[in-house]
Amino acid sequence: MKFALLGYGKMGKEIERLATEKGHEIILIIDRPEEWEASFPELAKADVAIDFSTPASVIDNIHYCFDADVPVVVGTTGWHEQIEEIRIECLEHGKGFFWAPNFSIGVNIFFELNRKLASLMSGWPDYEISLEETHHVHKLDAPSGTAIVLANDIVRHHGKKEKWVKEISQNPGDLGIHSHRLGEVTGTHMVIYESQDDMIEIIHNAKSRQGFVKGAILAAEWMNGKRGFFEMKDLLETK
Image 1 (tube, rainbow, N blue to C red):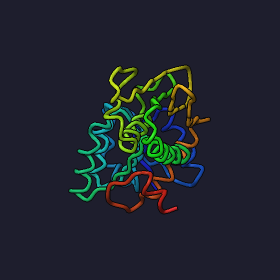
Image 2: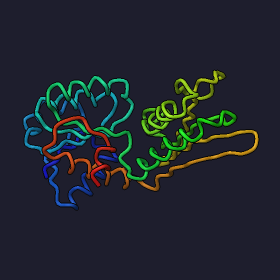
Image 3: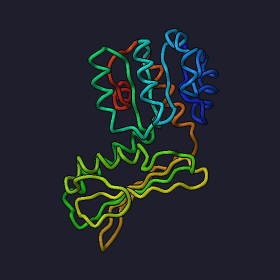
């Protein structure tokens, strides 16, 4: 397949390396908005675009892909407020779009475990819920997209929390997310249920970026020729 890479940071470089090893061809790399003027015609030659850019660039990148009628796989986080707008645009105009806050297979299994635990714990009000996430100091958004998915699923399936908030809140209807940015930590997420008597924790700890890279390439391969709005659950249901 022919890939366009939108964003050429650590994730973009790792995707280039592994995709090339798997026999794919990288025909376009865009790392700055000003590069589009000379490079846009090349985008139409790609089978799929993969975006790991920045929250400031991602919406424009998505629209360039829609205009070129190229399916786009997006792993950029920090823009979740606009996802519904993009979903509607994608479906109305028959485009191809795949979004995930985290492409790791393990994290997506962790999402499912979190939903089931939230449903189970809804009957035990003595347990207070909190959520912690830790990433490297270069990560631009806080809380992470993964933490927001975890929090929204707890709100939806537990029933005792009304919304998530950053850090600590005295409102019992708020679910606090504690964000830490330390060194070169790849990514750790913890969901904690604590009562006066004990504590229940579920933890996902990423050892490297390889899980994210493999998942993103898998999603790009899966998106070849597809139209519609897709997420990791759609891909995993086919496995």
